[in-house]
Amino acid sequence: MPQWSKDINHLSYADDTILFSSGHKKSMKKMMNVLKQYEFVSGQLINLSKSYVYMHEKVPSVVCQKIKRITGISQGTFPFTYLGGPIFYRWKKKVYFEELIKKVSKRVMGWKN
Image (tube, rainbow, N blue to C red; front, side, top):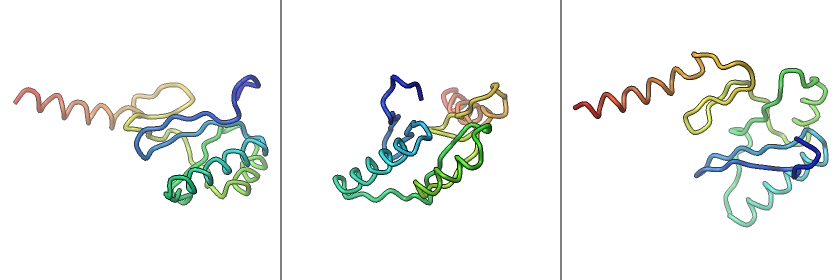
């Protein structure tokens, strides 16, 4: 995250949320505090076993382990799907979009009938 940005940023839709943060200990602790506050205020529990932390492949494994220790959240791998679309950080690959193309094509075919 750029130095001028907030420690935590997010995208949220219904019950799917992506949080963006640096890997710094302070940011990780702040993020976990925000999640705990959300649980308290909303009465909803966050299932950390269904949650993932995504990091660039060049992040040292010692940093990944530190983040796992602080958050209790497992590391996921890119690409992953968010709201039906692929999330990735390298070159676009057609295979990333195949599921989305199938879904859209199926809907369009339904319009013809």
